Structure formats: C-alpha cells, structure tokens
Length: 232
View 1: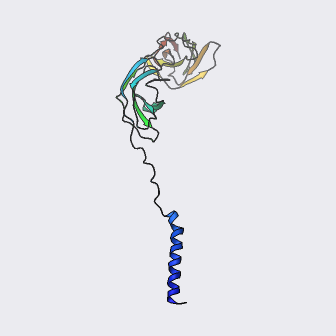
View 2: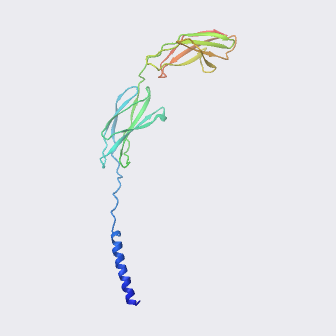
View 3: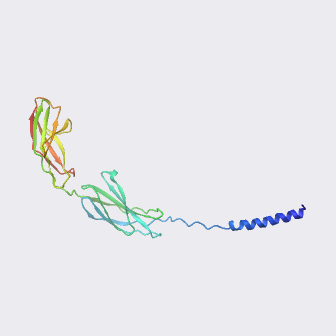
C-alpha cells in the first residue's frame, strides 16, 4: 500500500468517525436548579383557646416561591420533655388545635413552615399555655377499719372510693402514726365493695394509728379516711 493510499484511508476513517460521534458529543441540557429558598417565617403565634386537654393556636401565614408547603407545630411539655412532639398542619391552615394534652400542665408552642424540597423556615415566636386541672372533685373518702391479726401484723379494710369521673378511681396511699407508710404492705382478700391489705413487720405490743387516702386519676384530688387504730 502506497503512502498516498494510506493517507486517504486515514482521512476517510476520521470523517466517518466524526459522523458517528457528533450525535452524542453535543452539549447536554443542564439539570434544573434545585430549590434552596425556604418559606417565610410564620409570625404572630397566639393561643386562642384552652381546655384541660387541648390548646388552640393561631398565626399569620408563610409564603414560599414554590407555592407549596406545610406547617409544623412543635409542642413542648415543660416538666416532662419526653412528651414533646411535632405535629403537621396543612398550608391552608393558620389555626390548629393541639389535643390529648395533660391537665394541670405547662406547655410552649412554636410553628415553622417546610416546603416540598425540605427547606425550613425560621421558628415563629413562642406561645405559652397552662392547661387547667379540669376535674376538681375529690373521690369519696374511704371508711377504714384496723384489726390486729398477729403479734406484728394489722389488717386494714376500707370501703372502695368512688369518683365523679367513671373508671378513674382510685389509687391509695397509707400513713401510720401520721407518717407515710410505703413498705411491708400486702394485698388481702376483702368482701365485695371493700379493699384490704395486711401491714407486716410491726413492733409487737404497740398501738398504731392508720389512715388511707384515695387519689383520683389527676393525682391531685384526694380524700383521706378516718383514723383507725389497732393494738398488736
């Protein structure tokens, strides 16, 4: 093969290759620019209503360049941070009722907006609320009897307490000689309508005075029985 023939072959091959490559070597379209603009911060957050287990909030709305976002409502329970939560409200809402709160408790609230790209606005101002106790009626007071059943044991028997709120009564606390009693207390059989425990490891040949306190579900409303004494 002559040098001239070889040169023609190389030129021809290069031309063919350029036609093959050209359709794939043109410029590509740049990807759409990601949205990095957060919504504006919601403002003027206020509490508009309070019950013993709910708080209603209101705020001035956010805006966003995408036109689509939602709100997050942060709920902080001041004396029990483990109960803190974040709830979601739609874009069209500027009021929201936080439910299932604990009566007689302090809360703070903050609202912020999040768009579809995950951009988050700043936090609104903080709003505070104290839920009221709600139920303020104590349970009925137990009627107590104390009986010595062994040299170091006394059996306490009392009437079951009732409460104005169904199915929420009661827990019981004990005292002996005016001081809280928390040890050596064992459940015992009792007639219908009564509750009974046995207090063990008492000092023989002593006279002790007992009371029983009924406590309803709020943990605040209480009623204490009569004082009952027994000689071991």
